[in-house]
Amino acid sequence: MSTSRPFAYLRPPRGSLSSILKVVAIAGGILLLSKFIWVTDDSAPSFSVPSSSVKALQQEKIPAKIWQTWSTPSVLLADEDKARARTWQEKNPHYRYELLTDQGAETFVREHFDDDAMIRDVFLNLTDTILRADFLRYLILLAEGGVYADLDVECHEPIDTWTPVALQGKPGVVIGIEADRKPVENDAKLYYDHREHIWGITNWTFTSKRGHPFMRFVAERVAKNLREVAQKQEWTLSTMELSYKEVIDATGPRAFSEAFLAYASRVTGTDVTYADATMLEEPKMIDDILILPIRAMSIAEADRTVEGAHSPSWPAVIYHWSAGTWKKTHFQKPEIKTEG
Image (cartoon, rainbow, N blue to C red):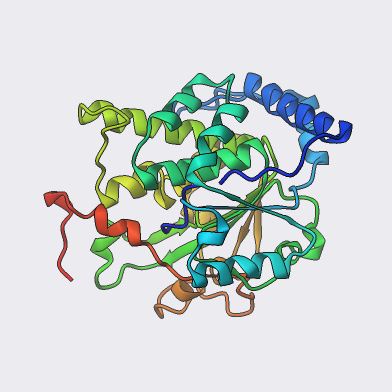
C-alpha cells in the first residue's frame, strides 16, 4: 500500500448511443447484484446469488481497463510516477487507462453508488487521504471492474499473461501474495499481533470483474470497519485520526486479506485460512479467485528471507516501489510508536 491513491475522474467522450447503452447496462448489472449480495458479519453465509446472476457473471470477462488514483491530473505527476504509469500503457496498449483524482473521486462514487447509501455516505464523509484511497480502489473495481494499481507500481508483464493459459477466462478476481514467511527482525513495525506466520495479499495491485461479489464483500466490510472504529473511539468519519496499524487493519492489506479469507470460507463452505494459500509455487484457484505466487506481485518480499515463500519459477508481473509516504503521518499514536 502506498500514497498512490486519491483521485481525476477522466471519462471517454460520450454522445453515441452505444456509449449510453453501455453505461445503462453496467449500472443495471451493479444494481442487480446489490439486491442479492450483502454481508453483515463473519458468521455463516448470509447471502445468496441467483443462478442467473452467477451465470451472467461467469460469462463476463475482466474488463480491459487500468485504474490508478492520485491527487492531481497526470500532467502534474512527478517524473518517476509518469514513467511508472507509462509501463502500464506500453505493456497493455489495448487496455483503456484511467487516472482518478481527488476532484473526480466524489463524482465517481456519487454516480456509481447513488442507490447504496451506506457505502456512498461512508466514503463521502471520510477526510483522511489514505482511508479514502484504500476504500476507493475497492469501489472502482466493484463498479466498473478492471485492474487497479498503485501509482508506485510498474508493470513488467502484459496483464493478459498473468493468468495461465489453462485458466484463461475462468478467474473473476486475480490477487497476489504479499508476504508468506516467519517473522523477522523489525516485523513489529508492521505486525503488532506478533503472529507466528506472516501472510497476506497485496492491495497495491489486483483485478476483478465488475460487480463481483467478492468486491461487494470487501467494500461492505471496509465500510463496516470504518464505522466501528469511529464509534469505538467516539469520532466521526470526517474527524478520524487512525494509527498506521489501524489503517492497515481497517482499509489496507490486512483488511483485504482478512476479507478474502472470510469470503472464501463462505462461498466454499469450508474454513479457509492462510494455510490454504501458503508457499505457493504456482497459481491457485479458490472458487473463481486466482491467487498468484508471491514473486508475481511482491518480488522484494519473496527475496527477503530464507524461511518463506519464493516461487522462483514464477515471473514478477509487477514491481512495487513502496513509496508509502502516508505512513509518516500515521505513526503518531503513543501505542504504536517504534524506534528506527
